Image 1 (tube, rainbow over the protein chains, first blue to last red):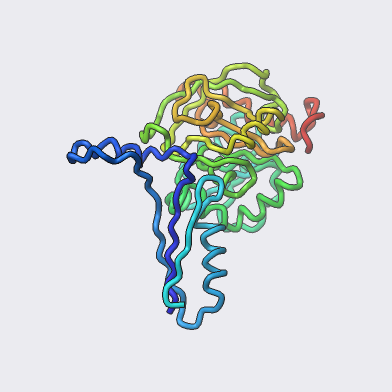
Image 2 (cartoon, rainbow over the protein chains, first blue to last red):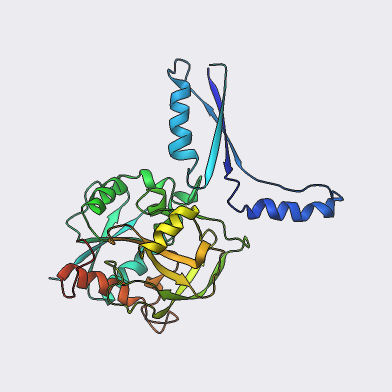
Length: 81
Length: 232
């Protein structure tokens, strides 16, 4: 069974206010040597036993639904294909 | 016979009833459309209202894009049918690639709910033709993900071709270049974050400036005003 992990991140030029908020909270933890925090999404997809073209189908899912290419980029990793 | 304006209800839409009421108050005939309708039922224009379609799962508007009704709306928009998206409707139009850019979390991360002062930048759209360019209007804004972003080349193109339709006078969310609303190349598809349908009655809104949106499309549809410059 193929398992695909898709990581979706805001493009670097898009401000990530959630990451900024986390960065701002770090000194409260006593952590002072972090220069940037960016928050994204991890999506885990499990294909059926006999699924074909797993990479191609994953790319369609990621490109057309999971990520909005206007603001986000994605990377795929396929396990057990 | 007054023009028929379809108001789409997705699971999670909130402002569909106010949108229908605004259509009625401005003199149009609202027609309810359901998200899995494949047919538009002879409507002359379509209003995509605000709310949280499909619970904002994944990204605002991302799932609504794949609904049956949007296939039909996309085809109709390509033929020149006027389509308006407000708030979540604007997000759906961007996700559907009917409008450029995207709407992301407000820069300050807070949900913002207050009247927004806007400048109408162009009357060369099906939905703004009765406004004076440069005039100020007040529509309520209420959103957590209304920060308009696009890459610089797209923003330059929008500015150069008069496709920025509304601009915030007090930017409430960090939108690039204070953009509150944009249009497509043909001027028939318009999206904006603030809510003209909540500004149609002195009792319940901060102004009645929003009546001009539906009035504009009715005028556009009946050819009551010069429509050169906007493709039908």
